[in-house]
Length: 126
Image (cartoon, rainbow, N blue to C red; front, side, top):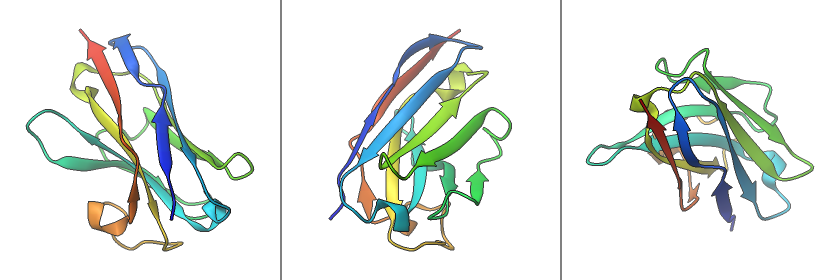
């Protein structure tokens, strides 16, 4: 079992930055691929960013490419999402997720992940 706890959400003006953190329990964090998803009110949960088990390979949704960066610290069992040049359309609840597959082929889908955090709200004002 893996427990994931997100933090770092909040209210920010358009153009600003935020860094989300996701702390994971368990000693096998370094063997998990991780992902970040977001869900706006009334919409589906969609992929934002992900990595492989080592963090050496990263993936991004086109909508955030060049603005967001995923990273991890395996010693701290933590994955991060650095968000910059934020836009009002980035407003959503952000979730981190863990996959027991080191290289999930469906990293862009919620079905590619077995464990989920409770989410953290990010609100970008115009």
